[in-house]
Length: 294
Image (cartoon, rainbow, N blue to C red; front, side, top):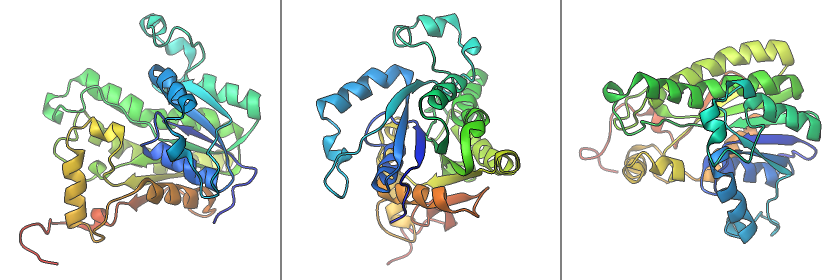
């Protein structure tokens, strides 16, 4: 097992115990890493109450029988780089009113005050208000919001966390095959956002590598039955399709993605890469259903 003893990772995008962010946190915790959690402001109370009530205890269990812990949770809304950008309407929202510092730069500054430098940042953030709309029916506003929350937010994280990352540090984002293949139903501008995210990964690898000596990579993860994926509306069919047509006929697990993130966090010569973790689904050019037999 890779050893992350003494390392600190900030994982943005953990809202429950079902998504890839959680899987990455657990893999890092198994390796001895200290975990800082970033949770979207509107669901902070839900997450913390579920954690305290024991709802996540089964999922928190590590291989040695102990429970995964985190050092601190930071409310974050990665649609905003600075506090000055936050509209009064958002500040006044009942789910935001109790918090003050939740823009990306605010969170980076808080973490630096609390823990100094960090070694790893994980961007497990994506959102589109019109995810169920075909691209032709997506509004300009919805499209730009998807790009902001799902792609530009990674630039913002690297921009503000880069200066407080140790040299050799690692920034990893989560993407999806819709960036380069047509996935009907994956709408609202999300396919465009994932394409931008992968392009930005390469450019950031060059810029942040030269500026701070850190590595930037992406994991293109396959279909997985997370809460966020269920919002699309047909994740069950996507999982079944992948199981039938991928080279490896198995369901993807959170551990698969967590293990890949653990590898990338320590792969000292790998940067600017989009690593497919999808049972090989990305390699297929035609479905085998209906005319090929195993």
